[in-house]
Amino acid sequence: MESSGKTVTGKALLEKIRSDFIGLDTKYETVGGKQTRRVYLDSTASSLMLRAAAQITADFMRHYSNTHSKLHHSAHISTSAYDWAHERVLSFLGADPSIYTCFFTGSGTTGGINRMARVFRDAQPDKDTAIISIMEHHSNDLPHRKHMKYVHHIPVEGLDENQMCISLPKLEAALRDGGGRVSYVSITAVSNVTGIINPIHDIARLAHKYGALIMVDGAQSVAHLPTQMFHPDDPDACIDALVFSGHKTYTPGSPGVVVARKDHLLSIEPEEVGGGMVDRVLEDRYLVKETFPDREEAGTPNIPGAIALATTIEILDRIGMQTLLEEEDKVIEGAINRMAEIPDIIVYGGTNLKACPRAASISFNITGIDHGLVGAILNDYFNIAVRNQCFCAHPYVKEMMSDVLLAEFGEIDFGNMSPEFMRKAGMVRASFGVYSTHEDVALLIRALKDIIKNIDTYKLEYKLNSENDYVHKSYKVDSEGIFNIFGAVNQYIDE
Ligand SMILES: Cc1ncc(COP(=O)(O)O)c(C=O)c1O
Image (cartoon, rainbow, N blue to C red; front, side, top):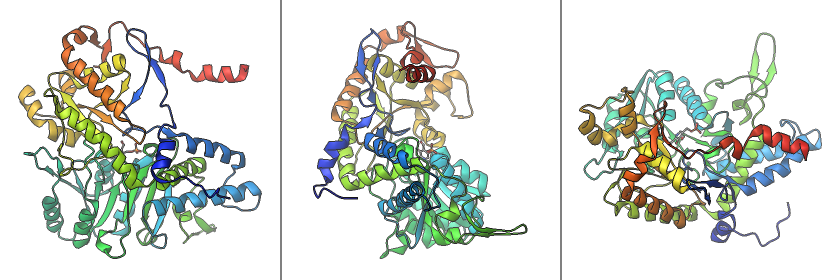
C-alpha cells in the first residue's frame, strides 16, 4: 500500500484518534428528563471501539473470504491480512517470531488461559502445581484449579501502606517449597480491581530460577502499557505465554489472543484438533502441521475480528504505548488524588503512584453507602457508567474489605449470599481508556461529592428490587425504546 509520506504518529496521532471511538457521543436521558452525554468509565470490562478499526474492517469485508488459500483474489487478500494480524500482534508485544507464535482463541482471555493451562500441564507431566496470586480475576484462577492438581495462591502485601501488591518474597518461598513440582506461575500484569501494575519480569525471573514457566494475564495491560515479552539479553525475564482480549483493546467483536513460545506448544499435540491444523488425515492416523499458527488454530477463525484487532494495535503502536501510558497516568493520577482528598471515599490499593503504579482501574467505596446505590445514582442522575460488586475477583476484594466486613458482620464469609452481605461486600470501579479525559474525572468527582452531600435525599428515591439491586422509584429507562434489534432490522428493511 502506498504511503503519503506524511503519516502522523505519536501524540499528533493520539490527538487525531482520541475522540474517534464509537459511543463517545452516546446520550441518555437522566432523572429529570435531560439528555446528557454518557461518561463511559467502564473500560476495564470492555473498552469502546476505535472507529478506524471498524471502518477499515468494513472495507476489508468487501474482500472477505476464508483463509488458508491464495487461489482466488479474495482468498489471497484474506489470507494475507490474517497472516499480517498475527505478525502485528507478535511485534506489538515484543515477541520474536522465531521463538513465539500468536494464535486467536474463541472467548477472550478466559479461553486462552484455559488453553495454556492445559498446554503447560501436558507439556510438563511431572509437575502438578500452579502458582497464582489472590489478586487474580477468576479467569486466571479457576482454569488452573480445574486443569492442575494443586493451585497455590500468593497473598498481597503492604496492608499497612494499603498497597495490595503481590508479595514477591512469598512467591519465592512458594516456588522454593514447591520442590520442583511447580509447573508455572500465572499472574495478571495489571489488576482489574485496583489497576496495580505487577512487576512481571521480576516474577518471570523468580519462576525461571525455580524451573517454572510464566504465563501473564494481559487482559488489563496490553491496551494500557508497553509489553516486551522477549529479552534476548536477560532470558530469565522472558515471558513464556501472554494472553489478552480484543474487546478490552478497543476492538469489541475480536477474539482472544495467545502469544506463546513455540517450543512448549510443539512438545505436545495441539489441544484442539480439526480442519486447518493437519497436513494429512488417513483413516488410522493424522499428521499434525508443524507450522505456526496453523497447528494451534483448528477450524475457521474469527478472521474479521482478528484483522480489526490488529488494525487497532497498528494504530496504538504508531502512537507509542509509552505515550499512551503517560497520558493515561495523568488521568488516573488526577482521579486518585482528587478522590483521596475526599474523606468519605476509600480508594483500594496504594494511592502513591510512584510506589504503586497503576493503570486503567480505580476501585473505591463511599463510607456508609452501598456500592450498588452509588453505581445506580451515578448512572441515573449523572449518566456516568461505572461497574460495581466484586469484578470477578472475590479473594482480592475480600482481602481489601476484610476490616469493614468484619466490623459489620462479625465474620467474613464470601460464601454468605445473604442480601445484606452482598450489598456491602463489593466496590465501585471507575475505569479508563485512551479516550478518557480530565473532564470525565471532574464529572465523576463532582457527582461523588454530590452523592455524599445529599445521600439522605437520594436514599428516599431508591428501593431494592427482587434481585437486590437499587432501583429508582420513579425514573425508568426504556432501553428497548433506545435500541431494539427488531426495530433496527425493520428500519433497515423499510428504508
Ligand atoms: C485481569 C482479567 N483477566 C481475565 C479477564 C477475562 O477476560 P475475558 O472476559 O475477555 O475472557 C478479565 C476480564 O475482565 C480481566 O480483567
